[in-house]
Image (cartoon, rainbow, N blue to C red; front, side, top):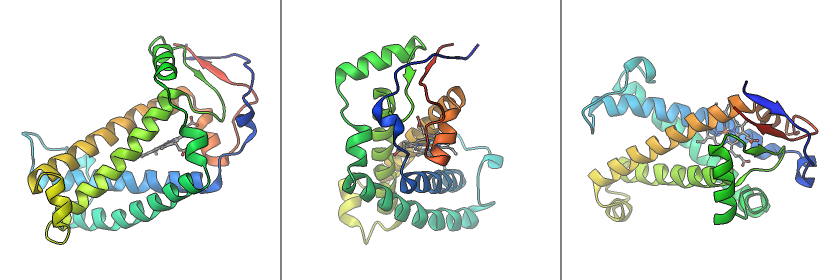
Length: 217
Ligand code: HEM
């Protein structure tokens, strides 16, 4: 017993289609991010920071040089695509419309509802927990890119490396940003499984149903 559909008033925003640029950049980002994480795990395995390595079958690149080639190729795609998404988000007002406002009261209400597994998922509008998670993953993505630059070119980007506390700390920051993003992806995919019609909406741009859904377990 995972979800029960219940007719709820459709917010005006539900009629809006999800912009094409958001859908394209989302899927390009998903591909680039997964390549970055899996090749990053192989690079980590060559010189682990902690007393564990990632299972080789879960990594990309085959060996260190292969993984580096994947990591740097996907890096250009991730950064170029991320810049398009962020520029569009700010300039078109998309971030303001979809990610704001985010108040503590809303967050508390939606977080409590999520814990009770009664969080409404309205077609076309993000709840406060989603808004917080999306803002957090954007910041984590920016942190991963900046700390990556700091450890890739510590001489050319010396002020950035110094700002992050030096090479070793920047490497730790890079790892922690990856761990945060990987945690986000696990929650994100679990939510897509719970409310699968959002997947269609992220592909076609249209809300999946003409009514909202309340998710209960
Ligand atoms: C292949 C795996 C992925 C799938 C199946 C997926 C699916 C989805 C779906 C269905 C939505 C719409 C949610 C809704 O309408 O409630 C969404 C939105 C979003 N996803 Fe993903 N996603 C994936 C990977 C990622 C990755 C790797 C990231 C970032 C690290 C990410 C970040 C986001 C963000 C920020 C949004 C909000 C987009 C916006 O409206 O601007 N996703 N995703």
